[in-house]
Length: 306
Image (cartoon, rainbow, N blue to C red):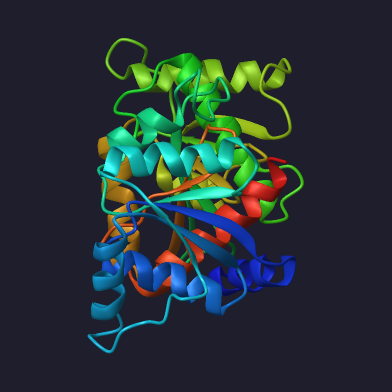
């Protein structure tokens, strides 16, 4: 896949997946679910307060309303019960993935990752974004820009594995993973993230991180520009052609992600990986295209996860 539109088309071609929306009583969420339904990507199951959902649907589409009579509606007394019901649908095989409605991210993920009643898969949950930007020659994956503040070594292994899984959903057989830092040399005392990158690269070479090529540390320019890598004398299969960018912490990731979308005319899609099935966490600030693409990406990734 070469564009965000390719993701949407591929999800539609694969057939509609079942989408459980937790606390669906919010107009923009209903609009996103409706768009996915109209494209043949998802069959929404709306969980929440029935009266509030009806009111949100009536107020959607710039006040013109949306007809959600074709959607299954499951009542919940509050957002926490809505999260529990939505997660239960996925756990029991009655839905393929989850989307956040008008509920905070933390309680939804806490419910989803509960080891007894959720869809915990024993991995660290992480935000995985797919980016299309005019200045790069292909789609790339960026992680983690939204959940983990300062991952440890084992956390980075899970983040890399989730990002690689998404890259493979895009059709990349052996993703090239660039571990980002401010510099491309290792300074363990002053810049610990560079040492972590070197360790992760060696773990990949020894087969502890599989199905990809991992290298770093890289400055962003070295990761995405072959000419920059050549000028600095960097010899690497990853440099200048990265499929996956792994950031050192949430500050770097969040700033890079927002710069790409808000300043670099990028298009994007984002999901949370790490559970048994993907979770879509739409923001009200997301464009309609981003929300639709995120649902499409989750539908495709959910199929890959089984």
